[in-house]
Length: 175
Image: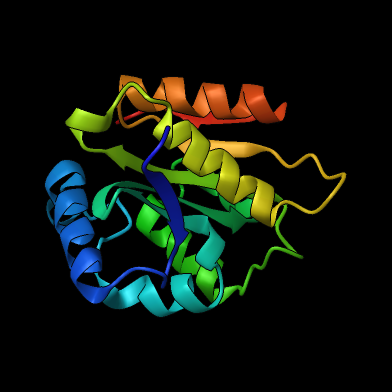
C-alpha cells in the first residue's frame, strides 16, 4: 500500500477538489438524479467544518484516485430513508438541519465510495470508510450502518466494512 494516503475534507488543494468533484459527478451522475445528494459546493461548508473526518480523499503519490463519504444520522431519518419517505438528498438536508453531530448520532450512513479503475482491487474504499468510522465512532458504541445499494461493488464494500467493524448493516435496494 506504499504511496497511498488518506486525507480529510479540507486537506487537499482546490484543484484536487475540483478534479475529485468531476470524477464523482461522472461516475454517480447526481446532476441528472435529484434523489442523490448533489456533488456541488452547497454541502462543502458542512462537510469541511462540521464532519471533515467523514469525507476521505484517497491519493496515490500526489494524484487523487478516489474518495469515500459517510455521515452521522438519526435512526428516525434512516428509517424514513429505508422506507422511501425521503430520498438521499433530503436525508443529507435533514441531517444538516437537525444538526446531528458525532455526539448525537444514532446511525452512520455510508453515502459514497469511488476509486478510479486503475487503483481498484486494493480495498482502498473499505480502508477509507473504516478509517472514517473509527475516527467518528464514540468508544464502546455499536451504531448501525446504513447504505443505498447503488452497485454490486458497493454492496461488497459495505458488507466488508460492517464485518471488519462488527456493526449491523441495513440496506436500501436500488430503485
